Image (cartoon, rainbow, N blue to C red; front, side, top):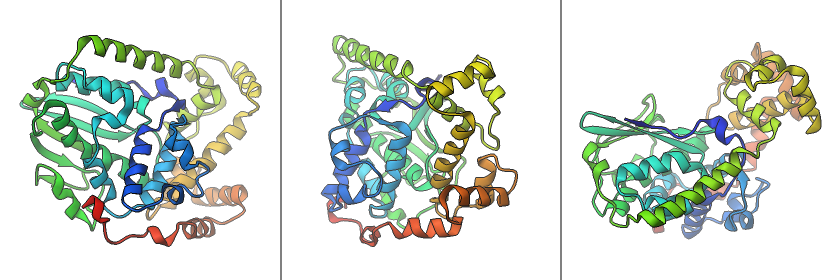
Amino acid sequence: MLYLSPGVSEWKNDMFTPCKLRTHLLQAQEAGCSPEEILDGSGVSWSNIESLQPLGLDTIAGLFDYVARRTPPGFAIRAGYMSTIRIYGIVGFAAMTMPTLRTAFEHWSRYYAVSGDPIVTSISEHGDHWRMRFEPRCLMSAEARRFCIETSIAALEPVIKELTDATASTLKIDFAADRPSWDKDYRVFGTKNIQFNQRETTYYGKRSDLDRAIPTSDTTVSHVLLRHCDEYLATLTNSSSICEQLDYLMCTSVGSIPSLDQMARTIGTNSRSLQKELRAEGMSYQELVRRYRVKQSKILLRETRPVIKDIAYRLGFKDVSSFRRAFRSWTGKSIGAWQQATSARVPPSFNHETPPSSLN
């Protein structure tokens, strides 16, 4: 049996409540890191996040890059392990009303985006074990992706314990990322069978865990909360602009940028009608492609040890030279100069070597 969340195109790039982001910024604050300083330069204030002002999922993913870079090594694992199901707002509370752990996870896989989580999960059952996979919902920097996946997988054991009043039967955990120098933080998990540099990040547990009853299950309350979740999702899926839809399609077309005609066919229209819709939003297709490439190139170039050739390919350039020329025309700087200027803006005070005592 396989439980999958809705396709990306159903969510597009709408506005989400940044519950998860706020939680981890509050945890950082408790650890002695200022949320205002973490978000400095992002264009989004801490007051916006603290008040749960809705943001686009791409924006939330970009803000996690700031959190990942400006918190101590190992913070993501420790923060995730301190999480509770309640941090995910209505989605978390609804999970607490489900009859079993299986139905709670099925619920979570469908409604994860309501909490502004850029990580999507899928669950499958195999023989005597079950698996949960963790993948980014949108294009993210390597640092943001690792942070979000680590906090998500670290939260799994405590959430299972919270929902069922019993310790999770963890069999194995695979991480797609490489082994960090601070891997001692991974000792919090209930298994020593942890592998790095795997094809995908996956949690393995005993299948019997999925049959566990949830003591706080309440059918009446569940129906009410699920109705609210459905109403919210219905609002989301009907509010995307044509630019947001095309942004998503470009994001999924690694190695090429679809032509206007290809885009039109994909969304079920013709190129003339598509151009008309874009003009109504004050945009041409060429400008939309340029804007997409500028945004994504800056995200990818901030990754640790970025490979310029791979970035050029992912953004649909025929060679590295073409990408370098385009980047200079966009920013007025060479790639190297832009990277140097960007890294210089990260406050050195956040380059912690010792984890804060409050999270030990």
